[in-house]
Length: 398
DNA sequence: TCTGGGGTCCTAGGACCC
DNA sequence: TCTGGGGTCCTAGGACCC
Image (cartoon, rainbow, N blue to C red; front, side):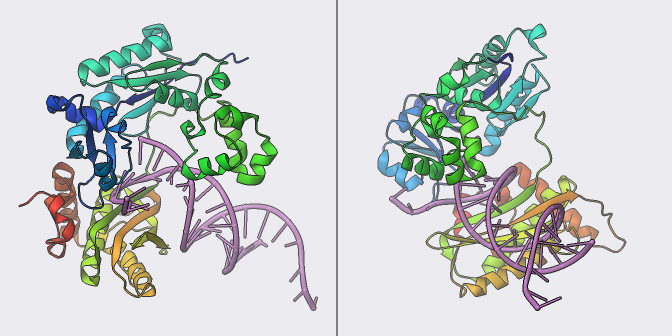
């Protein structure tokens, strides 16, 4: 069948945040542990230990639900600065084997080792070496899938979790996929899975045998793609690096729905400053600004505007986002807001120079603030109007 | 159960241009 | 009169991923 050799690896750290917490809290090993982005009333689970999973706890689940399912679990708040050092070590290990490393988040990446085999051995040998080094140098376990493409390697590493190595030899892709449930295929989320089950399709083998025409009638172009993927066919190559960002955004969900126009505007202003700082560091400017509002119970709207020229300063972002906010909010009768956010999209390289007489002080200030927030977290510096807000109890006190 | 925050990609309709 | 076809940009929303 295939004359390609299996040289694509997907490497994934196991229950990354929880594994890192267990390193410094070994007394919790073997117990249900849940790490959540926030422990407030609207927090959701980031990662949980395999012991917690036996109670039905899952990623992206509301913390309130996780507490019901497993009241005995230890609940911890995510500590991103602590995890990021391990993440850098992880990616550095991978780059020791090939420059062809495509990061896919803090705790996973794809590698193509076709050009590295003379130096380091065949792909399964390299996979074993990577797993050993992750364990020795970070102290946690990782899983690896090896196959001819990114899709099959991803499914393979998931199948081996935790602490697994799964090799799918060339030509065996469809057979490896056939018995697996459709939800294990990347691109089949809750909605697509429900629609497929409605067609009587529960496994990837059933999906592969389903008539393409019927899939296209139901899912459009999506249908043809689903069918190909069910057979393990996937062409996108491993691309080094992560490329320039296509959008930059910040959003905030309130513990209690926020009714105050002034406080909403102040939060929005802070978000514009953070986005402006990111734009500045990446030398990018935005041609489209998007405002996001969510009203209770869970009704989300977005409004966007494209000013005539690319913009990148906090004042410019806030001028656009503030206008969008005023219009959208009054359309919704100034109801209390569950979430407010803004984003810069349609990014392009920033060509602008600092104009004579422009407020250099303000730009220097913003970049200083951005640097402090990088090192100590977003809560370290806040505008006066943000202080005393309901979400502050998450942050450090000064 | 009651749903974070940061992203990517796709669709679909309408405006506008040739 | 009352109408083609293609291309591009913009906006709003939604599915999906980590």
